[in-house]
Length: 452
Image (cartoon, rainbow, N blue to C red; front, side, top):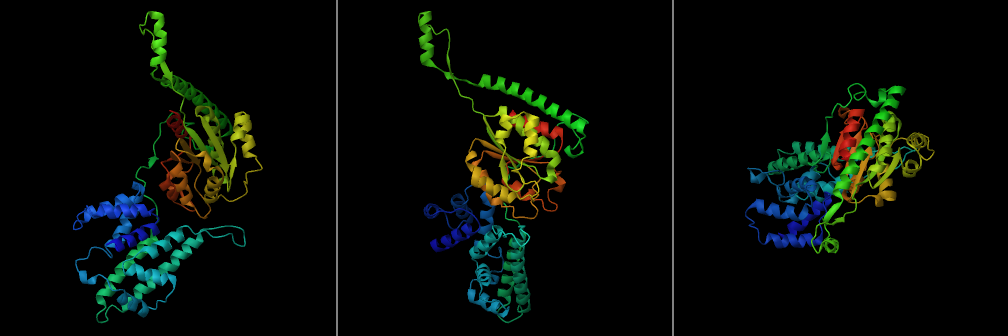
């Protein structure tokens, strides 16, 4: 049993779960107190040690089914494959060779999915180098999956032709079921379980005409009017926050100071003194896309970031197209209109480049991840259109591990999130909250919820 648990741990690691040696030791101890005849207790003990959070439970359940149930719960146990020699003979008849992929498929068909899952994990992390045109793409992942898919389809056709051979019918059927599972793993996206995601789809109608008009269709006079509305709103929120923090700064009773003051009243504590608690305001790290596809909304989002500086203890702002540019000092030393003009005309921002969210996240992690801690809210403003380049969602997942929460504001309607080169559905699996923000009313809702 210990050897089988070790092989299962290897399969979990291949699927991206973090399983340490100490957890394996703990799991072996826990299994001594579990009735091995009952699968529920056995599975619970494994999941308690191997799945660190609810986000990892779906991956664990998937690997568990693949490893312990094979091709599924079959009534006909004779169709289950336990002899790898039979499968190897079938693969040889199907024309399979001895390369890495064929060995991974052989292990998968005989009940050990670790090598196949590791291959899929490597495909997910593969990033193509720039070609002759200097443009990167994520076509390498697609090509790799297609290569494996073609091999699986060829094997399944060969197995179907050999299914009538004497003594190999059951083996062929079981192998065909396992190949169906392999095809399913290839066709699905490997995304974490994110049941706590808050996806905001509704908003209050604070302003009927101006508030519902998309940023992209505003006239110059409406832009000026909208900026004034945002400034008035932020001033009102600052006043409300000041009163709230003033009331919340009073801490517990300061006994020593109260007793000292009681000396003026013959030892009677007529005046109570309280400790003063330091203000604890949230830290903000904001990344704003200023590329051409969101240019109309970028001005208002930058205005929002500028206005939030006095509402929080620390606000660090970054503008990006294909790389991050720190604009925090520009906001700190200029008034709002001058700051926006400097940002939108900055020579450090490559406005002519293609948007690359994966590169932006990787660069932010390399140079600015020290800005993020458990008190930090990360706000990402953009349409998540990465020009078919590698999304590198694993980097966003690492940022999530360090941050208090990640909020994504998308200026596109939700109906467009799964079209073209949009990676929004990939990224939202690693966010705590996503919302559409394409007009003034939606922007006001977000500001009020964030500040208050």
